[in-house]
Amino acid sequence: MSWLLRGCLCWKRWLLWGALSAVVWYQPLRSLAEEEAARPVGSAPSPRLPRDNLLVFRDANHEIQPVRTVDDWLRRRAEILQGMQAVMGPLPGAEKGCPLDMQVQQEVDCGSYVRRSITYASEPGGRVPAYLLVPKAVLQPDAQPVPAVLCLHQTDNAHGYDSVVMPVGNNENLQYAKELAERGYVALAPSYPLLAQYQPDLQALGWQSGTLKAVWDNMRGLDLLETLPFVTKDGFGAIGHSLGGHNAVFTSVFDPRIRVVVSSCGLSSFLDYFGGDEKRWLPGKGWTQTRYMPRLAAYRGRLEAVPFDFQELVGALAPRHVLLSAPLEDGNFQYESVDRVAAAARPVFRLYGHPERLRVEHPAGKHDFPPAMRALAYQWFDEVLR
Image (cartoon, rainbow, N blue to C red; front, side):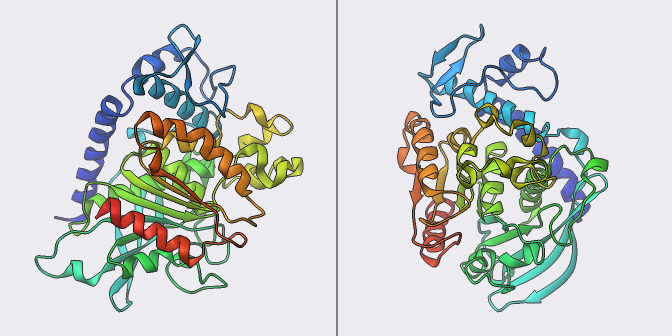
């Protein structure tokens, strides 16, 4: 079967998955969407529900009620997604659909696996550069398919996605795509928009944030993995450091096909970012850069009003397996804030009966992804995906 035909079939499956997800995962969303239909595009429910108490929701009369059931929680979760899209822009639907049209530009023999430089079409007029790492064993006749992991890179304007697949710069602890391929996983490492050589015209393509463009590219990357005969189809992992760490969280909130989420140095409450330094929220700084979420600049001086925060996003990942690595000396995302994020999110995991699936680790050191934390991440992938 040609890659073009597989891409078309994959897109049809994605639309079907979306419809089923609305029933299985987000059953209350239809009524909530109807209730919120009168709101202007890009707005979020007001007043904002508390970021540190996730077990409250807004009922059909917009009264705040305690969460007692998973259905109650799903109403709160829907509001969290609405808050995300008020800042990031709306997640696209079928209008962004197109054949994936994967093209292999180069293949390198890396011993136990091959590293393919590829591009794929994530939307009409937009192609994503990526690396696809494939263990040689799965390319043999009659080989069994293996799990795949989405490997998302950190902010690196010089090397971009190269940094997770090969030694470049000073990144000896960041080659997790390479290490996963050596462990027998298929690894997909897409480039992040507006870093290094990947420079899509976000405005021309209709995106309101680089963050959501990255999420969409990642979701289409999962569509691509689903077309590959050597990849299992019962769920994926996602892993990333720094930018890759919150990119993994954002993508996983929108896409339930990701069953295990690993975020290294990737998050803290917006209220605590760089110790609350207000200069970090000037237009074009920190989170407000074009490649991230420019609309966040409007919340400078009133961060408590940002309509979503990582407490809510981590809660929205329940009941999946989530590992947060927060080094004790990380200057970007303070470990104490990560503890508060996890404390707020854990009651949602408890609601599902799986508080143990949210795990926080505090390795020694600064903004890094040390070997012990990567080993723990790979262990989680082994336990859940294998």
